[in-house]
Length: 223
Image 1 (tube, rainbow, N blue to C red):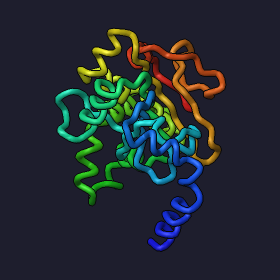
Image 2: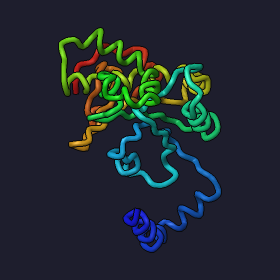
Image 3: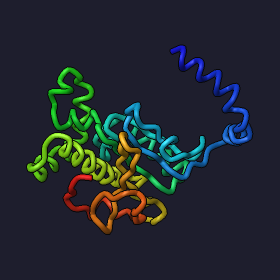
Image 4: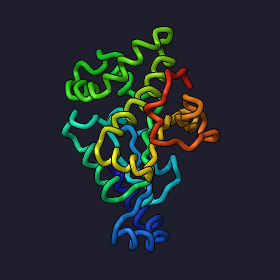
């Protein structure tokens, strides 16, 4: 806790002043262009990863970067997304999974969350991911199976995202774009789902996707 308090003092004394004008502007409102949905995992920092400043990302985090489809949950995910899309008018939504995801490990191996009933219940929103993996990746195990699960989950959550009315409306108008990313904690690499390739590719070779990203996917290999 003392480390956090020292960090606040450093922020106020050193970091805030150069950005004082920006924060004064942000005090009057926000206008982010991107909704960044990712896992609650402490090893991911969306602003650090994207080198973005305060006010540029609207961020939603939860265990497993899961978005319950319309009518399937009463948490804050749908409300947060609706606000970002309908009120703030974001132009892009990124769902970013990550390597070594504990939520996806729990999805594959329920024994890891058997003493965490609320977590186990939450992971049921990713039941489609589990089914896809069990039916299509019988040849994989260990880390390779986990990597495939992480990828597939990003695509499943993109599909769930499209069921939300506010998102569906903007997609219909063509002024909202969806992106699926996977961040590799150990290397800093980011892979994005490429519609043309039908798989995750290095962000350096990423083709800008459309709203058809989730629906036109095929079974993936591993990164």
